[in-house]
Amino acid sequence: MKMASKLRLLFTLDKTTFLFHLEAFLLLGWARTLLFYKFSKIAPSLGERGQETDQDHDANHTPSMRHIASSINTVSKYTPWDSKCLVRAIAGMKMLERRGIGSTLYLGTAKDNNGKLIAHAWLRSGPYYISGAEVMDQFTIVDKFAKTASQ
Image (cartoon, rainbow, N blue to C red):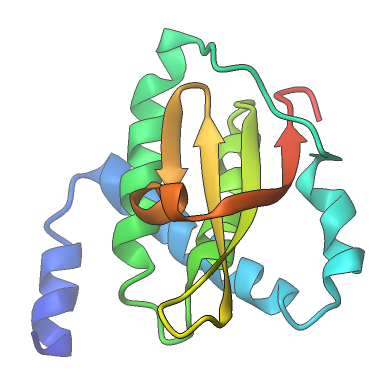
């Protein structure tokens, strides 16, 4: 799809979806810049290490959570930088945090078909997975970070 067609499509979105997509784009860029720092420097900003948030959620947050998940997963395909799983999870966590919604970021490892160690990150809020859920079952959780609504 040519760039002009993509831009035209972007401007046909309703205002709410457009604003969620714009926020996702900006936060994906911000999250990508965090990867230039050592993980030990950014880890404290991800929430309480080794903890999880509740599976319960406020039903009033469901529309926002769906918009966030959709925006993060859609926009990440079109960023000029790599927006892989960790970038998507951090950006999604920030979008949820801005709305006072708690979340848990999971980090996992596994071995690929060649025996090489691979990593993955995914984000959960209440019972909903915001990003990375499609392959999370293939990974063993090695760390998690809980960002409560009040943090």
